[in-house]
Length: 218
Image 1: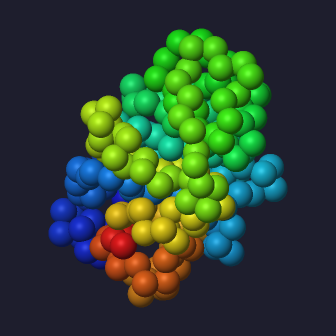
Image 2 (image 1 turned 135 degrees about the horizontal axis):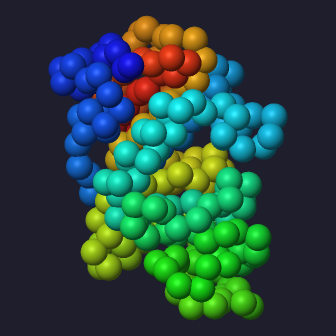
Image 3 (image 1 turned 180 degrees about the vertical axis):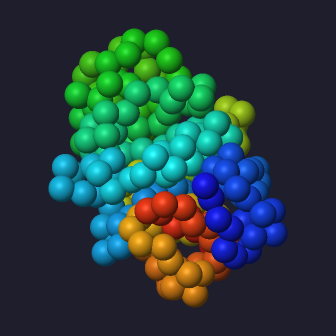
């Protein structure tokens, strides 16, 4: 059961994850989605986000992916989280500073909409399309225009904190969904908990068992 607490969620009187995702509305450009624990960490003891996530958080991830044209992730996260091609049919873009995409399930699949971004083309490219990264200081530079040219207007960023911080530092993220796992938080307690942008504007808060769902603009 989802309980609305503030902003968009309260206005829409959401009671389910689907309604929560719907109240965030459609988007163009980059929207990010992440889960953190009460200490602000992005992963648990197993080194992945799975151990700090909740069933409702995972349902929200699926709901947001269903609205996305392109999911963006870094190679390290794709490897630790065992990324496959999204079941929603969205395309997948994997970014790597080294060009190492080995041991990522999506890379091992020969067919599918998987784009590989790195400074050099990987040795075992299979049938995936490679795109060159020109600047490691801003690896996502131009990705919005690149995606839009291919009809992939709604981009969902699920990368780890390093690549995501770079995206925020360069002003590329327009909106973000942040799940804070743990005890129930009031909207006032959520307002200063954004892990990437201290000036972010809080648009929505909803609560569920073991999770607080917030949505922000930048």
